[in-house]
Image (cartoon, rainbow, N blue to C red; front, side, top):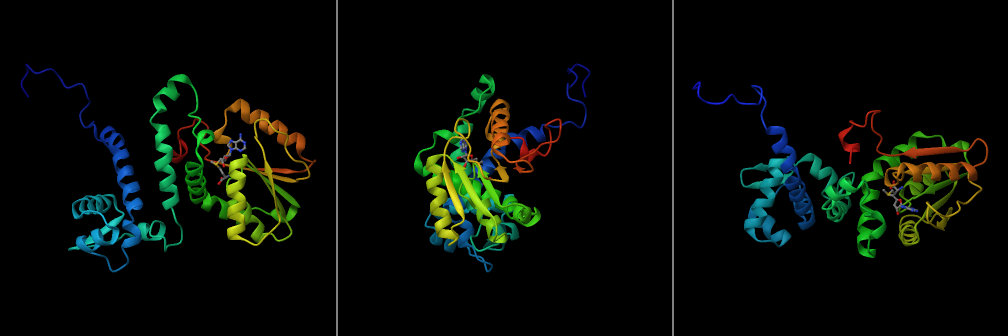
Length: 288
Ligand SMILES: C[S@@+](CC[C@H](N)C(=O)[O-])C[C@H]1O[C@@H](n2cnc3c(N)ncnc32)[C@H](O)[C@@H]1O
């Protein structure tokens, strides 16, 4: 190196790779959402399809089908064998609609919620949340609720299987969304009764969902606002699943005080959420 050139400021071996990767990862997300939305993963079975067949099956131009499919190969969601594209194991399990889980509703939910992320810098500057959850039109609410249900399905199963609900008579699910936790818990615990407290338009979705998924009539519905309204009594277990992260610390303290006031001695409060370590730096999936 010439002695006239200024010394590079970055220590040797430090590259901008991480920044480039993080800065462009939203493009990968957009590719994934688009591929799922146009039906790439449903279209591809185990035998695979070539580009012409894939483009015809999902009814998009061959050029953009190629862009879409190759991006998914690059990201590990498709595999390419000569001219044939097929789902990778993870895509087949969670995005094909034929696997053991279905995360397509979660991707649709992200698509809707990223509209609010466009205002994120402003929210950080102002020290406020986006208000995203409370301002949804009915169609966006449906997409939101189905997405949350698909993303939290694993926790719902884990809670239903691991916690001893046999010690309780009545469980109140606060901010219970579509009722997906209650459906799984009540089906494993036939003596338990359930209550679901939600905003009125979400209660309507939960009623619909419970009717479609089970003939069980052990759930009572309460329309209300967790931040204002009186909570029902007569429950000896309370569930707050993925609700605490929606509210401010002050609102949570007030809510927990009111839950405590409505609970009999010995009642249990079950908290399910995206918990972080004590210094809020891990796991990365809990940070948003
Ligand atoms: C992230 S979702 C979690 C849903 C469900 N518990 C789950 O884990 O799948 C948060 C839920 O809180 C509800 N919620 C938000 N603010 C509320 C309020 N002020 N009163 C009642 N429910 C509220 C939303 O309608 C939404 O269904």
